Amino acid sequence: MLILSEQDARALVGVAQAIEVVEQTFAAMARGQARNYPVVRETVGHQDAVFGVKAGADTARPLLGLKAGGYWPHNAARGVTNHQSATVLFDPDTGRASAVVSANYLTGVRTGAASAIATKHLSRADSAVLGLVGTGVQAVYQLQATLAVRPIRRVRAWDPSADNLRAFGQVVAGLGLAFEPQPGPREVAAQADVLVTVTPSQRPLVEHGWLRPGTHVSAMGADTRGKQELAAEAVAAAALFVDEPAQAVSIGECQHAFAAGLIRLEDIRGTLGAVVAGQCAGRRTDDEITLFDGTGVALQDLAVADLAVRLAQAQGRGVTVEY
Image (cartoon, rainbow, N blue to C red; front, side, top):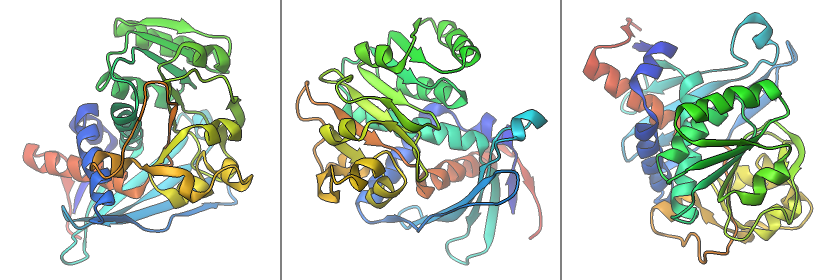
């Protein structure tokens, strides 16, 4: 069995590589070659933690595995990252565990990759202004990934934490981009060509009517029942694309519009994978508001973990143990 540490994962997998393999995975899902299994996500009852398991298989590669982990909100006080997870890959021919890969960094980079793939296929090609609602750790991945697919020149952002906003601004400036901190989400949305929401919010931060025509929105924060970043009316008014329809209406940004009867499953135009595979049209007009509801699926995690393993084997990284 190959074991890859967090340091190994960071050294091996870059943003552009993650975008490539996650895009391939989305297409495989649309073609019926890859499938995500039902998600387990539960409160632990200890340390206010939430724990989950996501699993799936891609017969095109082939690839089989799971990611287990969750959110420990008190970790920061201990000097440890709040999000903790690990991916286990299995030999699809025998079922034996073949690798364990630290997944904290990889979860961040695959989330950024998914959003960037949606931006690549759904936003206007000339999109130059990126808006971010939420500037925590994930915002950096979102920024890096968006820059890989669109000619972004300006970044507008808001965060309830002034420290987060200041630190993120330093990252943006370091990349030679104009950074424009804003007093609230409304001001961020007012000029954004691409708007990414990436917060743990449980109330709407972006109201209906704030999004200007032609905006693409990647809603990446909602992955649990109760989370919400956009008003249900704003979701219902957009052209909707998702990673997994069942997840989107149960734990994603679509859950509130669905529960209120504002949208049905049939109102989701398609999966991102179907767009990538050419099975579904994406943006239809320059004025259309498109929305990608990214709940996060197991196959994204497995794709980047598999990439890390293949690169580690080629470069002689990681630790191999008898299992």
